[in-house]
Image (cartoon, rainbow, N blue to C red; front, side):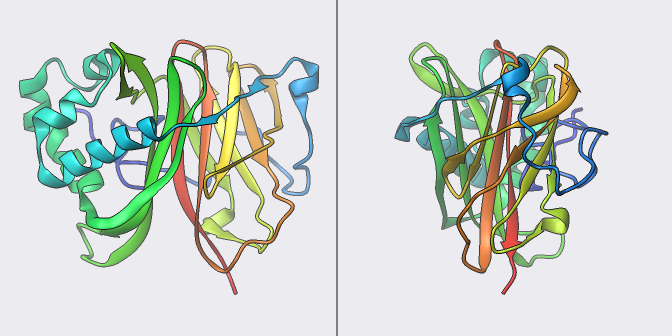
Length: 259
């Protein structure tokens, strides 16, 4: 069975699932000094910045998955996945409904119905997109309400957007440390992949920012974003994407801007 934890630090299916891999704060060696956040290796042949176009359809697809998870509608959850994701998640629907589906229901399904909303919903090309939701979630263990987010990349199959989960790309939030940020936040995300990373992107509260990278390997690097404007105190979200062409990882995290 593939254990499911997700990104928001909700589910993370499989031990380090790229998508919903719950973002940790430990880098994999590519980030060092937080002051060195302006290095842009794109000019030296690094990955392109993904071009995102607002489109409500990917966000609607992620919302349907969240709604299905809340309702424990395993058939609808299974149908929300791309063909490749279905193969990675379980051998068949029956195994998904028995093992992984209930874990998604406990994690993604812990969002409070009507108390979350779409934050990101973008096409990155004709066949790929990213989307995320954020809002109130009841932690299954503590039963406490918390602000959380869930995001995923999507691929277009037979005219419909499907969630592309558990790829061989892993994203880990490095900065803000401890999910606490300054009024002008800095973001750093570690990316590791089984193939050269071709495109990257970072969105904060639904707005895309330039995403320079630093790293000695085309399969291992750190993606940065540095807004110029101040953010209001309170809850915020960041989402990152790393694409290797045929598949991608997109993970969302929450952070807090202190007073």
